[in-house]
Length: 246
Image (cartoon, rainbow, N blue to C red; front, side, top):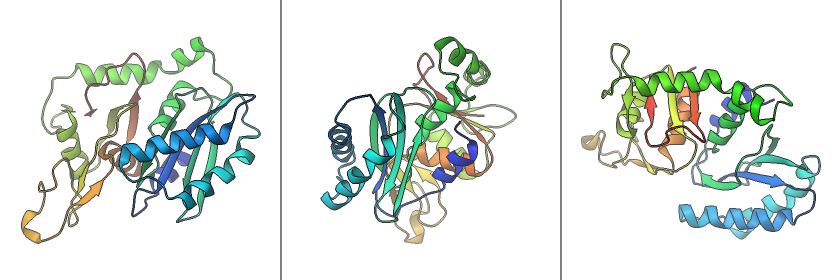
């Protein structure tokens, strides 16, 4: 069972450079696991423009076979950062698409989606998984049906990525709805911590450079969880075109 405490612990991790690897890997009965992981890691490096060094890549690949030994038939989530010595492998209760992401934080949206699908250990059938998602689906439907607004006020949701970035930066929020896929690079103000898509969006007169953020969606997710809010991931069949919060 994936617990909120596990997800919060991962979400609180932060690296200075995009050397934090999040790897979601299917473990079939017979396959060259290391080769497949290497392909995913290479793709992640190409996507962020900052590939892992050969030393860090080998450090991860050497540790994969032992952790996958007891995960045959499962998707395993691996979070690794050679600089900090982090290497954690978590078997997931339901299959997820394979992917690898390099960033300054662990990519935990797939973990949240797996928790929505299968909140109880062993419940991986399609029917049970669908019913376990009903409360989350209702919440998402309620938020998406609300009239759009800029910043949330009087119960109205913020709609769209810029408005949600501003709202999360301003303070705690109750519920954030994010798409399962997609990385959006942006910036964090070096003075006040405000998240934005534009490097010049905050505190331009203070002489503090904006810090690049590989994925502002993941940064929002981590902040909302840290503040005690809920994050719902819009998986298959849900609208993934907009980010919203309540």
